[in-house]
Length: 62
Image 1 (cartoon, rainbow, N blue to C red):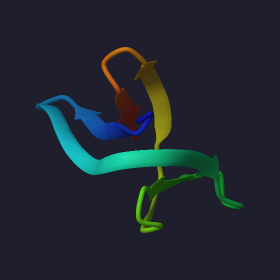
Image 2 (cartoon, rainbow, N blue to C red):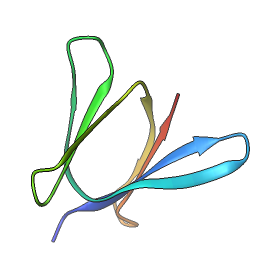
Image 3 (cartoon, helix red, strand yellow):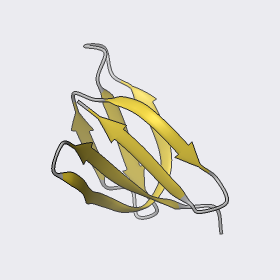
Image 4 (cartoon, one colour):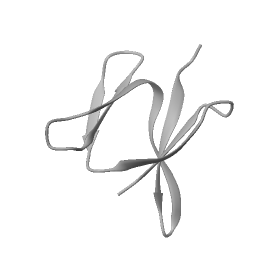
């Protein structure tokens, strides 16, 4: 499978915010929309910091 886990990186460390992410897109306001394997979506004001494909991890920051 090709899904990944999304983490929000802060000064305090990183927090897993979504598992099994299969799609990332931008919304009309410039934020991100993450969708998981089951079709659930999460919208947040963030930018992509790094995508580690081998580790299946997506790092986001505000």
